[in-house]
Length: 324
Image (cartoon, rainbow, N blue to C red; front, side, top):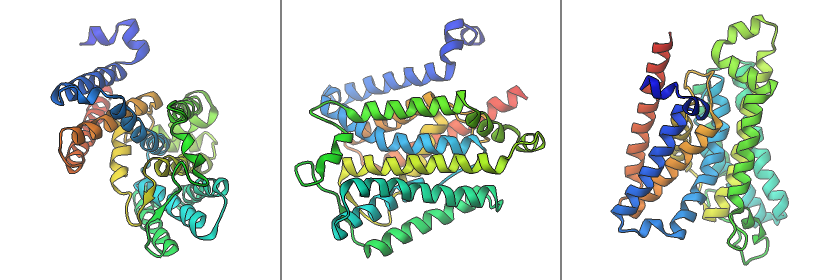
């Protein structure tokens, strides 16, 4: 195994990424065979991609937070809060579609600032902050919409042009946007001062502080980036599923974190991979579609996702012990 890992091509691509890609291919083939080939249809692929988009933006966002050694369990409910509040403003108060979409992102940013400030400047544990934000997001959405569900315009209705972020004349626009944002995130994390400081915070926050770096600013930035991406995720969610109900969103927390951790981001911080996160999200999305194609309920996916998180974290802990 060590010889394989030391091969120049494997070292360049990354052993973990190769394993994930092989797993992805095997999963796709297995689901295709188990469904008699019906899983290989274009509609099933598009459904998988539609799930990848909003879940992918959630995972990209939480990757930055986990890289600092933090965590955010509010991303799912905040995504729903963005969709519900801006959608209710659109439908009830006649706010223009463009303004509603911007509002979605700004709400995500507001939660990012709130979470980041409490974690970085008030030193409140990230777990406590994210759990509080999760409840606040659910409460705001329920109060603002009077606990009513919100339906965004269909593609053939006025304002339905926003659905072009998913597909335009059969072309997967969403794939281009998601890929572009993922590349930007990879550049920020691996090629900029922002990314270096964020990763260093996860490795040794005290050493970074003693070197004269304003760790509060950079830690807060990670949460703000997460908030922006959660706001974008909300747009892709409503472009796919139309109707949003208050009180939901929790189920997407574990899926987003699972995709992130499976992709090689360490829960202890200091190590993150945007490309790994993207592959991990595709695997989670493919798993969701595969379970539905086999006739099982989504409850089975929750079980499998939980096991994936445990396995990924155990693998990360074991790897750190070997390195130490």
